[in-house]
Image 1 (cartoon, protein in one colour):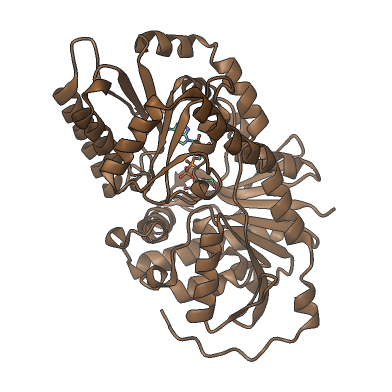
Image 2 (cartoon, rainbow, N blue to C red):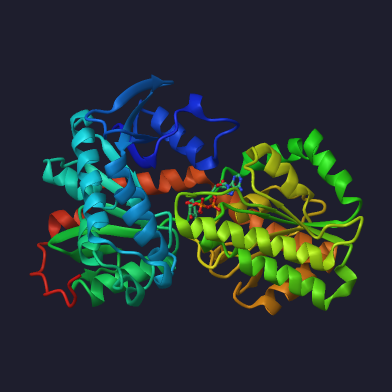
Length: 475
Ligand code: ADQ
């Protein structure tokens, strides 16, 4: 089997990480170790100037090749186009889209620099797997340098429908860049359909019944690969963590009240203001829950250099303070708003303690927090997941109470239903979800994507490409 090369925006060396690694990191590490692999990407350091060559560190059969980014590259690439334009548009937030041509140029330039530093490290039969929206043009830059290896791409975010995507300046160049990959993976069938519609409607391409895309004078594959979690480890972890000192302290502090838990990165895609509003509505309209339920919202800041993220943090702190001021009693605070990160093992114990997992993104590629909540439950007394229909996970987690997070009354009703749900129904809903989570683990996801990426595209060899139709739109 050929060597695997993983490329991701951030590469964390195992030694620099506190606590236990996430499921995705563990699964990719195992895949890399199978044949002595290479993991390439940004070190997370912003330096005076961008590195001219990667720093190589080899640990447990994996070579980590990390690159520092200079200020003048990092700002337009990361804070600029990737998180100021791509992230909002991929989450349907046209109102937050900020496009500056110089930032788009910076995004392309950083991808070209990364490709130039990666190319010399590649061996002829390496299989390369590129992750996420920061790195869409990487394969086309590698191809320009003569790299003919098989290259796959996985988008962790949603892909919006063509109506929304065409509002993104640069969309034509980006989708054409995707055609340089051999396999493009999306989280859900909905994202895949959005891509296929774009190919047909905007790029003048074709989609074959077996998932091949014929566009931009290339034949490549595109598919849906819903990412999973390390379900068995999460089950063990949560069983152990439920006995931890911290989980015991949490239970003691609840004094018999039901716990609703929310765990997110502080991001506008996660629907946090809507979530607090729904909880407030529950307390306002169903007084029986006052004094009997606590919402623990854990939301450590992310991307805090960006103004939108700073404003969101202020908004949430104010909303939590206002709701607490409105309903709190001398011995009960409705919302515990916590802005610090917590180790995975602690979160697993907290999840198991919570009667309700409240996961209400306005859009989310998958949302692993929802899956982790389900896998952390006690099989004899499982909690209930209240889940946004706009999370990719909603397509698999059919035992959840599904809500539209923009509908405050509906979310509050679902919370009420979850809080009073009888054990038999909780068990039945949980078992349906666990069955899927045990089947589609993150390890199965890695294997599924890589086996298709490694398989040569017979169609590409057998069928000549039709002459390209003229694209309908140019960006
Ligand atoms: P994220 O937007 O970061 O990821 P999510 O899938 O919810 O979202 O979480 C990823 C991991 O981070 C999970 O393992 C979770 O436990 C952890 N995490 C989240 N909030 C945390 C917190 N407050 N403290 C500690 N850990 C926390 C992107 C996409 C998602 C997609 C993932 C994976 O936006 O849609 O599910 O990639 O593809």
